[in-house]
Image (cartoon, rainbow, N blue to C red; front, side, top):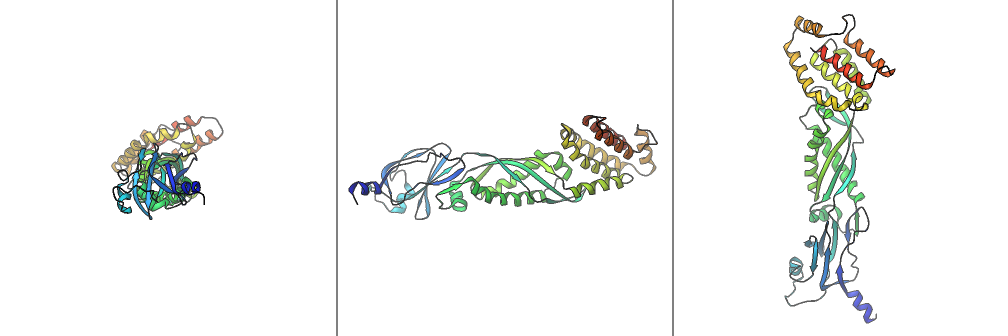
Length: 338
């Protein structure tokens, strides 16, 4: 081996990572049989962290900046190597760079329906979809728990693991949430905030921080929608409070298909539900029938159910707009409950 090859093999003067490949979260500097030159430089760019690993154990962690590698800047590694203060020779160490940039627009979804226990509807199954963003917040935890000693660790690899964490956390979070189903369906921001806290705690175990967690859509399975439709029909002559709740739930998928429909539904949800509950508790027997009859403006010979069916038929035929249908439907329900 020539003297030039020997010198090249022994010394590394500059350690840095240009992060020129998108989606890479962790990168091990290619050491092979090289040694790091004592007094060499370490460049850690903004949104990066460098981790020195000695004999499998994390020694020192460096944030953004330019460092001259000496016993002063490598205190833990110096202690592990048992260097004397005057001993200035090349040294062996594995160096890992981690990207701390925010990973945005990551999609999540529930491939299978989540079963929730609801005080109004009993057992409810739904599917939800959305986006989230995260970043590496603790390189020590991330190296120990997730990336390990791999030469390159990509975003796709970590998200394969995160996907299972997300799904189990979402199911547990919503399953134990003391929030009515109608409130979750009508306020996706509320659902996102509820889940975000639990997801953040789960991600923190692996050195990750959640920046945003958003719910973009909630879907009801067909069998649940059909069951709700049947309950609505049966409930026409039953408990007005539950009838109102079922009507609102039935309107959610329809409103979601119409521009501005879901927003309008969510705005009036709380007031409508509260008003229906108070009325149902305050009325009994003949008083309920009299109040409902006096407040209804539709012809006496046409029931509320018939009118709703007629309105839906007009909407399907294009005789009225979606906005007209939503307004008329809300008017029928409002007049039905007084």
